[in-house]
Structure formats: C-alpha cells, structure tokens
Image (tube, rainbow, N blue to C red):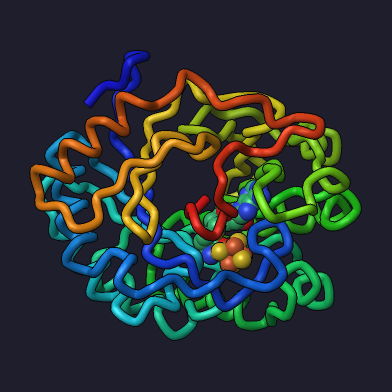
Length: 315
Ligand code: SAM
Ligand code: SF4
C-alpha cells in the first residue's frame, strides 16, 4: 500500500517484547521498564494475525525485534509461523546476541533468513558499561554460532558514540574483512528517557574520516554502502540525524502492546489490540496514511517525539 507521499510500504518491524536482558544506556531508562500488564500485550495468535493483515496490504519483509526478542519464550514459534505467512518473503531478527549461541540454529530452522546483531564495542569493560552489566563473550559466541548455523550476510550494528567507541571504528569495521559480515554504523538518536544523546552524538561522516580507504558501493534501504579493500562484507553508514532519509522510508512498526506506529519519531499510534483481521487491516491502513512526510529535526537539543524509549519501539 502507498502512503500519502507515494511511498510503498513493504517492511514491518514487529516488536515482540519491551523486555530485555541488557540495559543499554542510549536505549533504556536505568531502572529498566515497568513490566506491563500481560493482558495489554499482543498474544502470539494476535501477532500472527497482524502479520497476515500486514501481508494483505503489501508487507513483504518482516523484522522481529524488541526489547530483546530472544527473551520471549515463544520466539521460535513466532518466527516459524511468521515465516509461513503467505506474502512474507523474508523474516529477519534483530538481537543483542546474548542468547544467540543457544538459539542461532533453531532460528535458522524456524525459517529466519537474516540476523542483525548489535555490537557497539569489542572491549569487554566498555561493553559492560554501555549495556549496564552485559558480558561481551556471550555476544561474540553468539556471532560465531550464527555463522556456524549458516546465516549469510550477518549485519553487526554499532551505534556511534563520541568518546566511547570512536576509537574503535577501525577495529569494528575490520570485522567485515575475513567473514561474511556487514558492519553498520548508526548515528545515536536522542530518545525519550535516555540522557546519553547530547554529549555522545557524532555524525556518521566521522567513519569516512577514520577510514579514507573505503570505496563507495551503493545505497541499500537506509544505509549507504562502502567496502574496505579486499573485504568480504560491506560497511553500512546510517545517518538518521545528520541526513534525513525519510523520502525513501518503506516501513511501519508494530509495538509489543499492539500499536502501529507510522513513524519512529512521531507520537501517533493506532491500536489493534483485541481486533479481528479486518479491524487490524483498517487500523494499519490508517497508520500508513498517517505517515508524516519526514520526522522532525533531531539535531541540537531536539528529542524524538516518539514518547517511548527505543526498547518499547524496536529501533
Ligand atoms: N535488543 C535488540 C538489539 O539490541 O539489537 C533489538 C532491539 S534494539 C531497540 C534495536 C536497535 O536499536 C539496536 O541495534 C540498538 O543499538 C538500536 N538503538 C537503540 N537505541 C538507540 C538510539 N538511541 N540511537 C540509535 N540506535 C539505537
Ligand atoms: Fe536491550 Fe537492544 Fe535496547 Fe540494548 S539496544 S537495551 S539490547 S533493546
């Protein structure tokens, strides 16, 4: 389905839970999230019905995200059922990797085609600090398990933070050399309930300063693609703050409590909780037609108008 600005919406990001086994400083409030009433969250059957409704409106790619999707007990069943929905060509998962060593093969067997794994630093102490307690070893083991399971073109996502990981741009990028791994750098977005944004934001152009040998390839969705000489994987640069890419936006989001969000950085939401298939289709149409032409400025002291922290949207 097309929105009011002629963009065809083909990509749904479904958050299956707000909960997470990490507490990244830029994503979650320090206290974590208040566990919502179980009754207010989408049940597995409702998620599948919503995916069917979305497919009927032209969604072809589904990304399962969170919170941390792998803390959800029925995640394998959700992935398996989602990958069988008629019209859905590709089910992908975004994970922090902590539980991936356990789940990589089962995700593959459940029909998941691609994995994005978040990794901001290769330093165990810094990882512990930014995630408020995480263990880097688990994520590295998870990446290995994903490669072993045969996931092609794994994407590692690193949020760029001045004074935190700008000294690791090269070492993170070099993970793309010997393995079939794309490394993507993402500008830090100023979200609600996180006070990490003002000091740490750094424009994506910093990556090009540090890696002048990068050769430019193409644009892939929201990422500008580059390559290090001789590397197997690509480098993706994603710049939601310094270079608005809304004109090419093909996405819609569904939160774990059943709200379609037309835009990551806008407050509007359309609830589908408790609705049947046709009711969900109608709400999704309204959400697509409510997509703004572009999100508001996120530079300087501006904060996203999302009215949710990132873990409650899904990124
Ligand atoms: N827990 C999973 C993970 O970390 O990959 C999935 C959910 S997480 C909200 C999805 C993505 O959003 C992650 O890659 C994370 O780094 C990114 N993210 C969270 N807060 C962000 C922020 N303030 N700015 C930019 N990216 C952010
Ligand atoms: Fe959890 Fe992912 Fe947010 Fe980190 S970025 S707190 S891993 S949801």
